[in-house]
Image 1 (cartoon, rainbow, N blue to C red):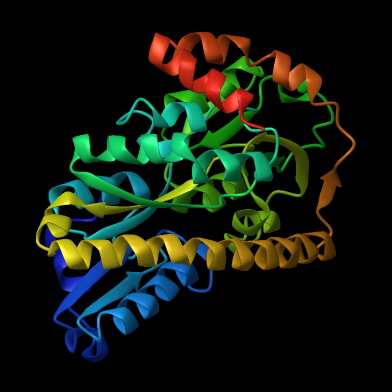
Image 2 (cartoon, rainbow, N blue to C red):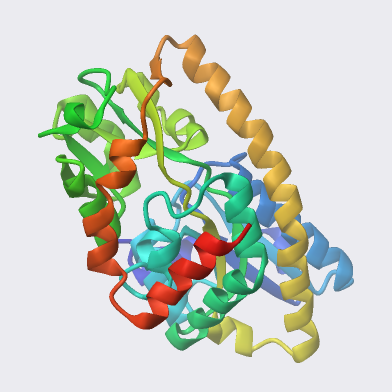
Length: 323
């Protein structure tokens, strides 16, 4: 259910510590407390509070307390929520350039993704957010996303035929599953567990930490490491909240966000390893020896559909040429 403005306002009554600051930026995240994206924004808040001599603070509302990602994006654009950590997927239908980072197999590895987002390409795309009442601050890791399901091991592209998978509310993600012969079902993240459990869908796709922290591994006993997507997460700020800050404080916020990135990556690597260990210990069947070539070749129509302008084609080329 969509979180109302009244409900958000009630949740965002500051804590005693936050109220002691002159400015408290309320930040949303769908992931639970302790998740690397949550701890990274909390770390950013510590840096910001220290560097501003206690004037600026961040209060993180984790576990989708302020709503699912699609809803919180809208509320951040409206200035109801100050900051938001969101996967780039839900932005694909809002900011055209973000589609490129969400294309299947656009990144060769996590290291390749880091080099792209840390460089000029990443900054160019962050700049596009300002046209949509948002300020792009930083990229966080989202790991490699793979398919999991409750029905059978997926060892080849043929096994996906006719299966239903939850995807984020993004046309790119929908078309990706369709290109593989599956049935894509866009739905909020919080509805996935029950939908798999009741058989409304066969499975979903995500990274190790999300597969584990959501409990989806409890109802989906097969995880195929096809690694079709390496989609960065993005930390954005409401343009309304941004414009209320002085130029000096804006720079403090930008630098604190940038400095939180290495911390986030370190936390992510540790959490990814721990999540994988827990999932394997739970007895989930992990399908690792898979030929990705047919998966990659099937993505041609997805690129044809979504890379439709010279600017986007140039962006794809720049990413592919990044060493």
